[in-house]
Length: 457
Ligand code: ADQ
Image 1 (cartoon, rainbow, N blue to C red):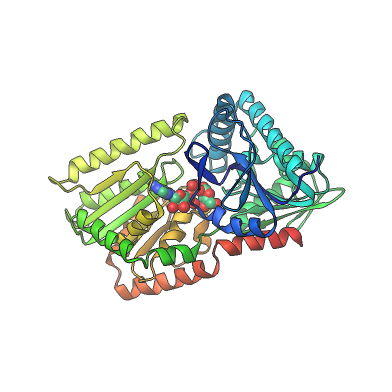
Image 2 (image 1 turned 45 degrees about the vertical axis):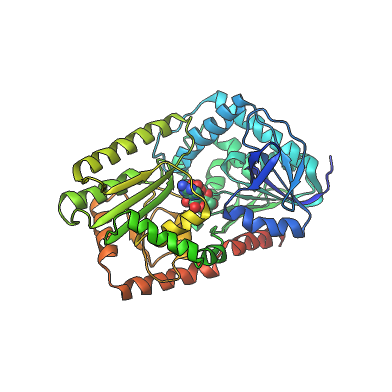
């Protein structure tokens, strides 16, 4: 098995969305933007699922990228993707904020699909290729691939948090999973804490000797390191300088009734994002009279996500009930304190929303990084706008000048939201300048090149 790609990305999804019969559009998002130039430079390929059930497509080229589809049946989508990835690993890795489902049927499907990805990667990779495996859906791929192709260099990056040993130990297949990751030469995490959890786990669970951030296997060493992911700062910075985006931002404020304060939340509708907690804090500010009716408007965008997983169905109902209650209690004819949208938006509209918001409220209970926080910062060249940010988001390591909050502490969140609304323009500007400096110098290109440099060295 020898292919021709000297640089290979292996991810659950291909970086394109279907827009018609055999017509594709590049998916929005930093990962593709960061990696596309590297792919073009290195004769690279991207291996992943198209997003449709039971589809067997031949490799094709799009937008200068060579794409290799990996098929998934609808049963595999249910068991591997919605099941083991999103109902077992996702909650387990996010502090078990929802109970993980442990099922052998799901595990078997996860292993089988990982095996398919590993075989496809082994076929596509040129001798000595660099293979970069992405995220929690494919944690067994590094070891499976190494068995087939010991000549390639393998990197793995986990986009979500890596939990402490005490939680990870719940997983009935904990040993297999760690051994899967140890097939890589370099395992990347969002935060240093994740890398440390992994190193500790290797020592405790497998009894493998470790030295600082390296696991010493008999025949080779595996390095663990943090590479905080970021956004394409330049793209957002440019986007918001477009007069159309500025005009739209103004229009949004007008449509909201030109309140004094616009607060904004933008998240996938996920129970890790702390949407309920932040809405509760906001509603208490209204109830106790800290905010006057009509003084502030909260816009909550909740992108549809994982709609066939039971927990997500329940969450949607809970949030929508809550929004209805708050608006019922505090709204006026034609004016509601919470404007809730269960929709996706394009980059322009998202950028206009960021520009329209005085306070961006990002309060996950646990989050690998949180790109929304960084996108907001990248959009505020006017140095207006305050960021309220959870300590439990990876982004909190870098964005120290945000109003940092514990999302479990409702009173603390109320204080932070009020402080952000009441701060002087000078204070807001001082904080935003410092946040922007960080995101501008640590953008997504740096993330990709730091990882690849470490992998190659
Ligand atoms: P997510 O959990 O999806 O990512 P996040 O990092 O916030 O979370 O990224 C969401 C992305 O979706 C952002 O780029 C945002 O602009 C976009 N988005 C959100 N709502 C949208 C809407 N309604 N319409 C259009 N776009 C929308 C996972 C991890 C994170 C980690 C990233 C990247 O959970 O912790 O930061 O991967 O590694």
